[in-house]
Length: 227
Ligand code: G3P
Image (cartoon, rainbow, N blue to C red; front, side, top):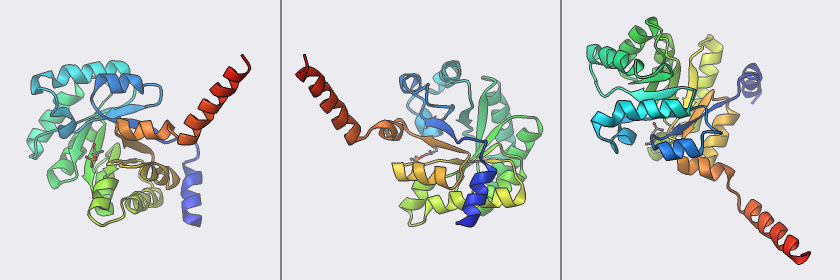
């Protein structure tokens, strides 16, 4: 607990970035006042034709000024570096998403040396996160929901990575991903995640509360009574 407070205090001036895990322009536009950036992945992008991907990313970058993570589909080092460089040219705020594999980590180092921001995805262990930081990743994305699905505690992994990066002085940001519920959001904030990405449905749940709705209905009723 004390350790958690020390970590939280050390991150005092850096508020958690909030990203939308989506590519739908209308959703991104709807929530643009809350979000600092966008994350996509091949599954999210598969709703669009491959030939439309670059123009969609350009449109997203017009709506949000912060990082827009776009994932490579290549799985071999050389191809990943080539594809990552191509992706980084779509827009200045694009962040290249790479998997936490040997090739992905090597590509992360190569792209980091060129000054290209990276987001190391499909992270399921602190050891993977440690290597991502070692390779100069801008962000590393532990997948909370998928760990929970498999009987592990995803939030605990986020906490562990935050503590390791603090203890080791790594600047790589911990981006809580695969967020499925409000508990994931609150826990990630509590343990000091630098960033979180959530689907539109979860962001919507963040501002919805049945007591707010009920309270508003009562206020409206009282206003009517006085008319
Ligand atoms: O974008 C990566 C991540 O957020 C995916 O989440 O729900 O498919 O596990 P999910």
